[in-house]
Length: 117
Length: 112
Image (tube, rainbow over all chains, first blue to last red; front, side, top):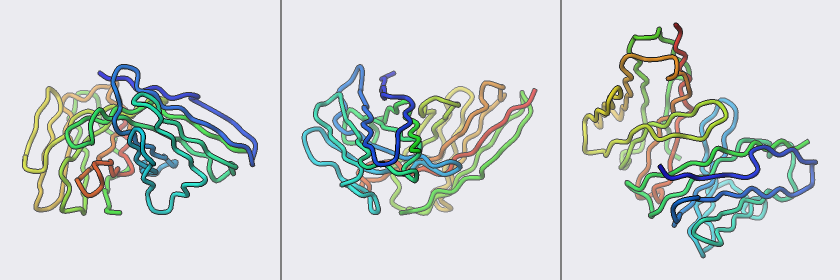
């Protein structure tokens, strides 16, 4: 099946710093990429949807100035957590799909564990 | 957003069948999915069902959909210890741009 990678897999940073997480589709072109956040014992929450070359669509309650998403190419999307705070500590997962959705399977990355001290 | 609910924990003996249940509220749900998440790994799509289907079978997996009751189930036949993982129910529809709306996940523990 199609492979999506994320880098880094784990990151620890100090409060106030910014962290960039990369999501790459390795063997397909991801027209659409999704960013999810997973809280302990809670479901994955969609943060934003990004289509290559256009601005990301953020879900209600997600601060677009804090969580910067760039989908610069069909194989790369980045999530930058700016001025990170301890409450931003979470597991961030991206997915890519070759189409706009529907029966197009979303292929998930392995996730990035962010810990903000 | 619309709710997707699952029981949080299920324990079965190896060789038995496992049934994981899910309910959802969005009547416009178009696709319903089951994902598996093993520790430290990403989500793996197990199967999905289109909303106009009642049942889908794929080897040891059987998905049943009761659209009237908005109830989805995943049955795993002959459950193995390697099936121990967290199973997420998810739905998507055109209104959400096919983004997935997940339940909280059911942690399946298979004991020898």
